[in-house]
Image 1: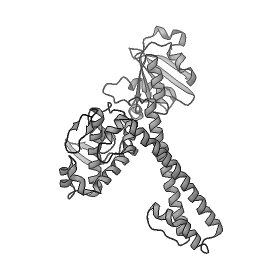
Image 2: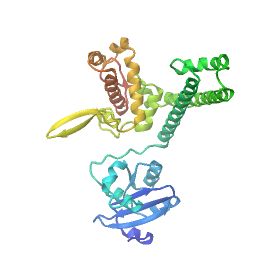
Image 3: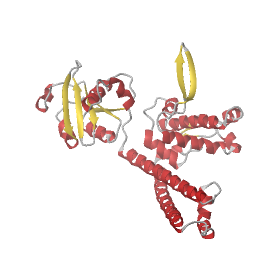
Length: 354
């Protein structure tokens, strides 16, 4: 087995890195398929260790800090490749230990026709972090609102559907029906209402920051020319796929979002099921929400290039199926806008130069 002092005498076909919080496990193969490197290193020793190695293909699973490690190794002259974990699992031999994982990664990374994760820039990671924080805050706000409603129902008080209705009537309810609500419960509900207000402020602050970014990012501006796509969706798409170079066509992007039917074939007969729901649930949800917004305004359908298709499909498809099909179409248009660096012309099927 190779040691650090002798590593330069080896030619590596590939190296697999199992990324951990504090330590990395490395396994390297030579061109004959023999293991010539098997080593554990500290995270802080990443640069110093790989500076000693000749340039080679280095694989790692898509996980926390994978993009940082990939950018670091690329600066050292290596060819890093980020692999979805689902493609590594078939190569794992024996028990689930770190060295076996690194060996499986080293084998998988040199397989032909494997789809790798596109390396994200720091700006993309920052934008993606904004969306993740905003999504978490929105989820917490929804939970807080539901808890307030549940406590009110326990006291025999119901409020009509909608956050605005609850916000506008909550304090009046607590004042007018103070005799029905105990002081302790009243304090709890007021505390939850204050939490709600703080969450609103944080969500609004992050949303404003996202909108500012969308105004200064050219790709976001192009995406916002697509019907139903605004600052939130445009920045989320740019954060996830950049300019879409990881996909050969819009259909592939739609499939990556899980907006296409799941297919099962046997005996030469394909059977289509429900949508696959693969890929980013967050992006898929945003595109379906955009589709629902468009479907709410049928008077505008004729303005879009896909208007005739939408008018023809609406009577024969359930509204949820129609929204999913439209979301897939919007995703394919979004990819085309990014890939061709052009803006969408709502009156034509093609895009025009910005």
